Image (tube, rainbow, N blue to C red):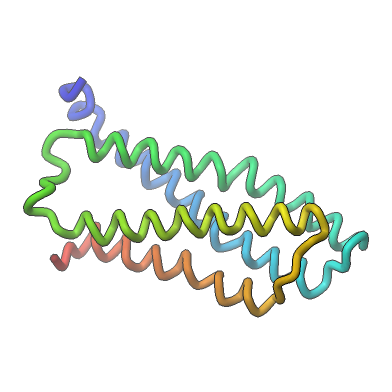
Length: 151
């Protein structure tokens, strides 16, 4: 199995980057939709119902599958011989912490989507604007750790 992972390394990495890109796109866009929903989408309004459809499709068709694929290909990369030395490559730990932060954010957004879906949102657009910075912070940490490897 490890020989196959080594042979497929570049393909695995390519699919990891593609799925991560799709996940990040959704993680940037969904909180933005929530800002509009909180500020302009009164429950029962046409705007609210339109935003519910957009949010559901974004989550189910892009964000959720992209997160699963990112995790799957990331785990395959971690299992590939020679990719990470757990004792020497200290950059992997902050990178994984940022991935966990992004995953937490993903689940937080799913819970907020359910509140909007059920017309029970109590948060303001300002909260969603602030939370929209979490994926950016995670992305900065991940890219610096993987590309620059400062530690």
